[in-house]
Length: 345
View 1 (spheres, rainbow, N blue to C red):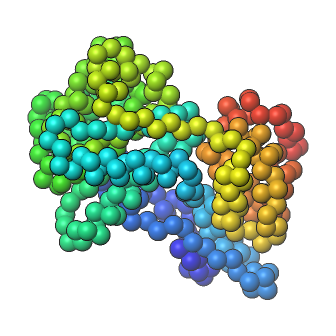
View 2: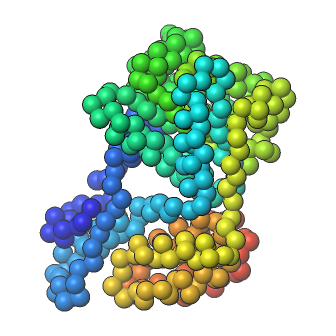
């Protein structure tokens, strides 16, 4: 969006609330959303703003910085490439289709990469079939303490099926889901939080069997993402071995302090919309940012975006090292990184 200050008055973050992307309407909004665009006002015009218009302008910039800016990391590119290869390989497969598992630590960009894969695939299908009512992608999360019924209901809720009444048993829901997915020509199913599925438990075995049923009855490529799935029990026992034998593995992790890390910092710095920020100053802090975040892309994104919003709120309009030190990030990075002095309250 290119923000018009006069049109922004009275709007707040709550006005942009949408359904989660685990529902079809929310997913479609995610797919169709254009990257946030906001142009800084010229210096004279900015300084001449009335208090009311300045508040509206600042709120628009805060909303802009609060939106996650997707950075095309090497991991995102690899997952997109492997995902497309699998959908092409599986398009005429009648037996067991190959899938992919994205595994890594928290805040390493697994969900972002998974959703970007789905978005790219859906846009490609829409371009090829512009007037179709297809649902190219289904995106769900594995249910906590899951059961076959809970898993089937996750599919049903995404599709908007009115089958959540207690009188509908697991078979009813599963049959309805399979029928709709097949008719909608879905060819990519994304399952996030797969680490919640533990084959070492009876509940995990039941859930795995039901997920396997979906993979065998739906002509779609399944891509999973989860935290350190190798240690979660996902590959335990016969079911785990079978899943491992059908899926390729892509691992995400912390980025080392290399030119790619500097490029990531530069990409995020280029998204800043601050009036006093000195271009390139964050890139010069690449080593510090790496120490502070442990090379985690999620922590880096949070740190820079939070610092930008803070710079708007306090009127400094720039991100300095002192400002970065004042921002709290996730506990893991705070625990592993160097201790940071805090501003006095």
